[in-house]
Structure formats: C-alpha cells, structure tokens
Image 1 (cartoon, rainbow, N blue to C red):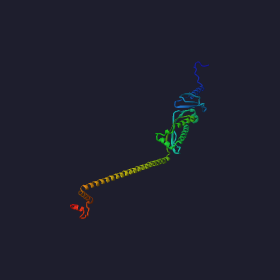
Image 2 (image 1 turned 90 degrees about the vertical axis):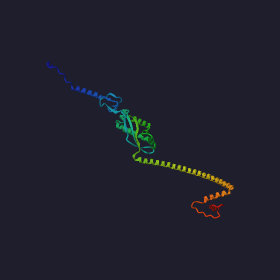
Image 3 (image 1 turned 60 degrees about the horizontal axis):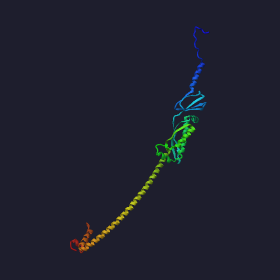
Image 4 (image 1 turned 45 degrees about the vertical axis):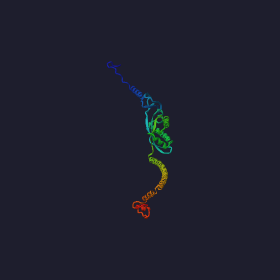
Length: 303
C-alpha cells in the first residue's frame, strides 16, 4: 500500500510509446509531398512508374522505399545544338547551328525514355541535326543562299513540315514538346569561304566582261551606222553643191553672153580685170609681150 503521507507521482511514459509517436510523425511527414507550378513528377513503386502528377498541390504517398517522387522541370528550355557541317544537294558544305525550344510534355515517357535532362538534350540534338541535314540535302546551295539573302535570318529555310516532323518524333519517342526549331547560324566552313568567294568574284567578272563586250559591239555598230549615214549625207550634199555650182556657172555664162552682146568693149575690159585679179598676186613677176592686150591695159593705152 502506498504511504498516505507521500502523494502519488505520475509514472514516466514508456520509451516504446515515444518511439512510436516519433515514427508516426516521421512517417506522416515523409508521406506528404508538394508539386509547384514549375514542376511535374512521376511516382514510382519499387522503381516502376505508377502515377504522373502534373497539377500543383499537396499529395500523399507511401514512405520510401515503397514510393519515390521523381521531379522534372516543366518550364521551356533552350537547347543550342553545336555547329555541324552538312551537304547540300549539289555537294556543297554548309555549317549549320540549330537551336530547339522544348519542354517535358509526358513525364512518364520522359522518365522511361531518357531519365535525365542531359540525355534528353543529347537525343533531341541528334534528332534535329539528322532531320535538318536530310532537308538541306534536298536543296541546292544557290537556292539556300538566295533565301538567306532575302531574309534577315536563316530560320525561313526550315519549313513548317520539318518542324512538325521533329516535334512529332520527339513527342512520340521522348515525351518532349518541341515549341520551336530554328537556325542560329548558316554559313560556309572557314576552309571553303575563300574558294567560294573567289569563284563568285570570277563569275561576276565573267558576267561583267560579257556585258562590256556586248556594249562595245553595240557601240561599234552605232558608230558604223553613224559614219555610214554621215557619208551618205556628205555625198548628197556634194551632189547638191555640184548641181548648184553647175547651175551658177550656166547662169554666169548666160549673163556674160548677154553682156558681150550688149557692150562688147565693156565685156572685154571686165574680163581683162578678172584676168589681172587671177594672175597677179603679191611678189609675182609677169612677162608679157608688148603687143599683149594686158600689157597695153597696164600701160593705160586703149586696146
């Protein structure tokens, strides 16, 4: 019996009960997990996927190792593919650097197909390169360069069908949604640039020489035509002048005849004066006979 002079003390809780409470709290804490708006998750049972969680919130699971929650970032990611040399249809080398905008669309498939972001980007890079190479291999170099020259970027070279093809394969095989696929750069390999530029300059020079030669031929033809027309005009002018001169001589002869008929003495004097003007120049020496009419005219005697 207890001593009435000593009050009863509460007995200490057993350690087994404390341990059970701690274990229960720990178990409940491990069974709760949250998914925020930036994540998606896959819940596994002994490593095998059993449930996909895509809606943010608080969830319950069995304690580890029964259940494990594997999380993936659901935000869009930018993958820059390393520059790769590709061949056009006419066997010209091009350096292509694509980039892909992507995100996880099917967490369960993503986990089973690739498991990690690094592996996913490796496979997505290989897929993009193979499809772009196949597309460029069906187009000629000149056509590609013409498209690039009329655009501010190389992206228009990737058709919508090519982007759709890559997106469908990535979704079906990798659980990835491809949001965009473009080319960051498109150019020539460094070792080929100089030879390509040399050929382009030679081609431009050949075209310029052809235009120059055609221009010179046209100029020569124009000059020859102008010379021919000038010669024809000159000949016509000379013929006209000859006709005018002949007419003038006929008129002069007629006038001389009329003047002689009216006044023979005056006519002879005028003819002598004309003869003087024709024969006598400065510093000329003339020898005449004394009975020459010109001599008598110079002496001032009558004829």
